[in-house]
Length: 283
Ligand SMILES: [Zn+2]
Image (cartoon, rainbow, N blue to C red):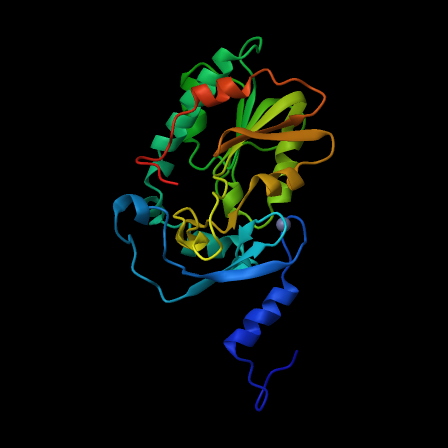
């Protein structure tokens, strides 16, 4: 549509136009505009008890799918990796996600180790971590005796070469909520699995909220790059044919594995081994 002198398009018109042109990232159903959040709102605000950064003055619009209830912002659809590095995953990132550098990777490694010990795997499994960040999680696993380890991260260089079909376990912690292409992440991660392997991933699922209050949930945080908030329905729709997703342990840890293969772990063991990774976790 052309706009120019004499054809002013107001904000409300723009919003209704964008609703017509945006469809759900996962299931392609229509979406509803649910409101704006300032680009500087962070997940840490709720735990610190005040804003880590003041409002930047840039409203980030969020939409919700009318079918699978996925919440996302297409504001970042045109961003390249350099934009994310400059404005979100920069030297201040640790301020909006303090457990990112050490606390969470250590607790995740200890959790996975307990989970493996309580399962019926023979020997030490091979593990690939997708979105490996600073590699802290893998270092911790190495100290726990695991040797066949690999990490992949868009913003750091780690293992290279073809890693397809090589791993008993693929992990992907706190990545899905950062991506506007969750289908590709899940496809990639499943591709790294050996036949019968297990994909573990974490992302908090949207709790039950009325639409008017949903944007107050602390996890929807543009400054952290939390731009895609999943539901059990969205994860089910992202799971390819022949595989099944299980979200039954906790709201934040899920598995995908072939539907005709029994997991060498039970969801009770996974839940039992899980520890909260956010201090004073709220939901
Ligand atoms: Zn949807």
